[in-house]
Length: 201
Ligand code: DC
Image (cartoon, rainbow, N blue to C red; front, side):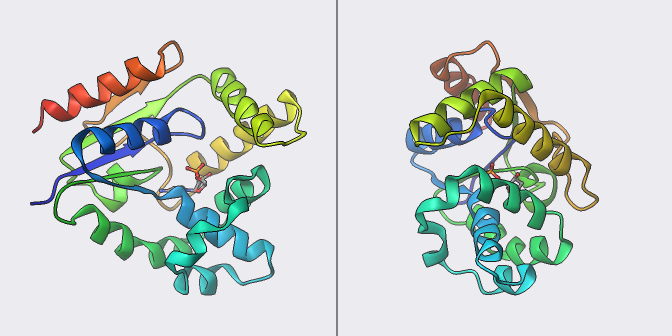
């Protein structure tokens, strides 16, 4: 039986951490859909054309070490504006959502476009300041030399592009639980998500 959990929200709001914890708790499969766009972005940085890269994307493209860099994140957000890139990635995500045994997908348009009939929809958010600080600490731990100001500018630019694009903009799906993690610990945020899912099980 399938059971889809759609978790959307802006960069560094905590949706990845929450999605992984929720998937482990319920024994569901997890897909970080941002990785698909990051993989396309990385190919473009290597010189490929965006739509062709999206159409040819394979599992091996998702394990490249530098997909988590700020440079790839910005390019991911840029290629994500292109409707043909998004269209090339839809079927894979929908198939994943409806696999047997339950699935958690996190991204920007899961509850609105990819899986509008998901059993549970959650929009995870946090203030830009909190998100920029979290992302700064993550990047610093990974060896990045970016300043807090640069990380904040990066987060704001990506927010604006992801939110204001014409195709599948980032926004809460109708009926989504809004989870603002600005003042929450990871454990509190995960517990709130688990509670929302248990209510639908
Ligand atoms: O979740 P992330 O930060 O890894 O996503 C990188 C970029 O990919 C994000 O800025 C916008 C795009 N994206 C998208 O448009 N739709 C998704 N479902 C997931 C990511």
